[in-house]
Image 1 (cartoon, helix red, strand yellow):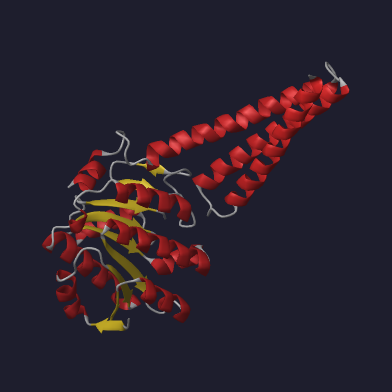
Image 2 (spheres, rainbow over the protein chains, first blue to last red; image 1 turned 60 degrees about the horizontal axis):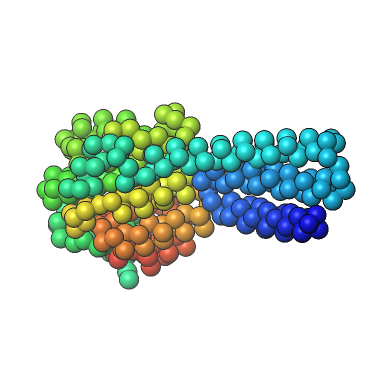
Length: 115
Length: 192
């Protein structure tokens, strides 16, 4: 059972690593601006999640529960959540401004687009 | 396609005959920029009763509005995208009349805003998009980035069938950029 858990966690770590590579590679293609900031936040969120999963793997593999590594794993998870939350909030804010289908769009713009 | 040379007085006639789904590049002599710029807007807004989107990287929105009003051009049917008024906000901000983008180097954001606007437009045959100007974009971005961005805008305009007007100041563009632009646009007009 533990072997299965370790295998799944290792697979998860590999997937996280690939995700980070994709995010960082996509980030360099954007010009400066909101999209780049959002991708940075997603990248950091994923890096911390990767750290949390790797430390979880080590904790489980070496039975280091309640050790400092266990604490680090939780801290990484908090950082990861913070970055994902920031990225999602920024995306929400950008969607309010750049989402021209939104009902929040200024009346003048609505009038010009529909005229 | 060749670069057509027009005099100021011929420009009005040319603009009156402009049809939808055309992308036109204007290469304007710096000394005549203000006059030609006003002439383009007057013909489109006052005479052809078009409405559209004005992307300014040249003059801040508040100055531009003042300048257009002083010259008798109504801004009622124009929505502005201002990428030069850094002072307004450090983040993208939408007001009633203008979308502020913090910097002319934030081309990704500008591209997203444009695509969204174009997708939500109706009656595209009487709409225009004016980009003022490429020469200023080149101050803030490198050649390759601007070329890609212009290509993106032009392909979007073609897909959505709008009139696209791209303004540039003569002598601020090098030969390579002019050639790329001429290739991408339907017509290239040099205003002398």
